[in-house]
Amino acid sequence: MKGKDVRDTCLVYSSDKGRMCPGCGRPAAECVCHRGRDSSFGDGIVRIRRETKGRGGKIVTVITGIPLDADGVQSLSGDLKRRCGSGGTLKDGAIEIQGDHRDLLKQELERRGFRVKMAGG
Figure 1 (cartoon, rainbow, N blue to C red):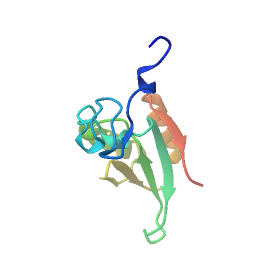
Figure 2: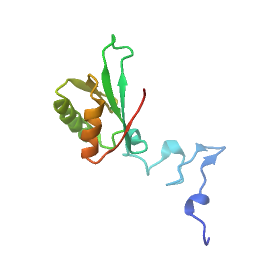
Figure 3: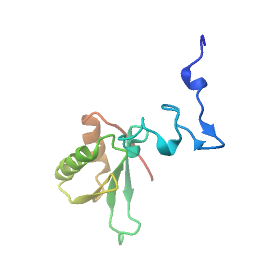
């Protein structure tokens, strides 16, 4: 198979078993090569957005896509809340910080080596 990449020849879908994992060749539900990897990592870009919906008009800065494990996100959450001097919470792998701190958080996350994008309007 000169010149061909292994990914060019692997099975990605079976009418019998559905979607197949290109890494281990098993059905996606039985995949062993992606276990332990957090699916919230996404594309490796940390996104920061501002939300007010469903919060009684109060502004909350939401940070998603953090490529760290649960303990790392918990620690980062505490550090960022202290840096902003504000309260917040951790919900479903996303850090929520009370108030609009997008610019400060962008600088802080970039200083720590993360790729950061501002999301939303």
